[in-house]
Image (cartoon, rainbow, N blue to C red; front, side):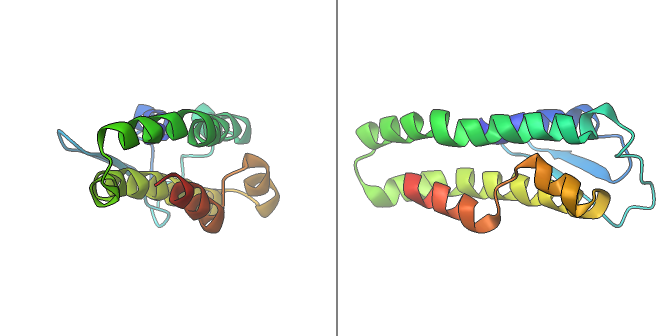
Length: 134
């Protein structure tokens, strides 16, 4: 669900240079290739600093408001912590991967000032949020 926000934004423009999308019936991943020779990401409307702020803001909001109640419901149905951990691990991994891809995009295509304006959580902050949930 959380990765869906990022993935939908990136999937919409999957044919733009440097973006490659692999689809599997159960797993959706989008990877950013900063070494691509086609640097057409920045002119795209979805890649403006303002649009990235919106997307990252929605993801951060979902991490803090939507995901905790879902994890609480999961605890009701799966009282065993090890079972929850096994099921939650791929979710954590997808969220971390989506953040890493956006971070790579920011590092490759934006100034440090622009990247700072986006509000993406650093890996330590993200890990803390995810570890507090699961």
